[in-house]
Image 1 (cartoon, rainbow, N blue to C red):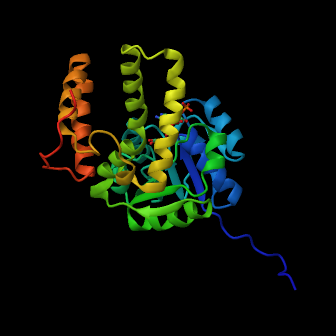
Image 2 (image 1 turned 30 degrees about the vertical axis):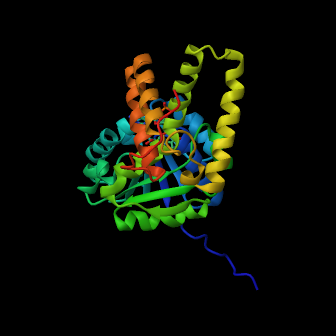
Length: 292
Ligand SMILES: NC(=O)c1ccc[n+]([C@@H]2O[C@H](COP(=O)([O-])OP(=O)(O)OC[C@H]3O[C@@H](n4cnc5c(N)ncnc54)[C@H](OP(=O)(O)O)[C@@H]3O)[C@@H](O)[C@H]2O)c1
């Protein structure tokens, strides 16, 4: 027999300070799943907060920090440069607020960016979801399976782990001391790709490669590189002069690139040294000289 007058389980309340791509996506998913009761949403203007609550499908838009009511969990999904200031303002404006859980979503900052709240007894953490939140609709569809790095107070991480897991996040722990290096890895893995591509395309253009051919070059080289790295791993997928241990060719090319653009030349040398190390040619001076 079904229970009579079942009591709905208490859903922890969630306040948002900052509700852009990341804030809206996570809050919408949590609202749909029922993990949190989305309560108050603060952004830089009332109209953007109202747009955010509309997208989330829940929550009350507010335009002042002091209008935020106490909540169990606070998500500070503001740009990195605003995290510390928002935490300080929150601690100053809500000195009597009961200690809660607060987290930010930055990959580069640690939970210590929320120190003013920790000093008031709050449990603080960072939760970095490794996804390009290009737009809210795209991120909503792409979020399931996203790895999420948790770092900070054990109590805060223990609360966030099941909440992120419930919406498809795959949580893992990162030590606070490793947070900067962890995020630098993500920069290597994704942010440098457009930089390398842009440099290559400038070089091609400067050497007379027809502009009309460049989109096809970009598409085929990137597609093949991704397929090879995915299938074989980075070391086996490496090709080019470093894979062959051809240090003479690397030296001559580095000089040519330096003459074209000193910064690009320095990058070429640094990346070639890493490529030689990846190929196992570190300290190997036996590379065949390049053909003239
Ligand atoms: N985008 C990504 O791919 C990605 C991936 C992983 C992690 N992250 C991290 O997630 C965090 C948020 O990034 P995002 O891409 O979601 O940023 P975003 O789309 O630019 O949204 C930032 C939000 O913060 C609000 N805001 C800015 N300053 C504020 C302040 N002082 N007080 C209250 N609200 C403020 C903005 O208000 P308005 O709406 O009024 O402008 C906006 O709602 C960052 O720490 C970022 O590093 C981003």
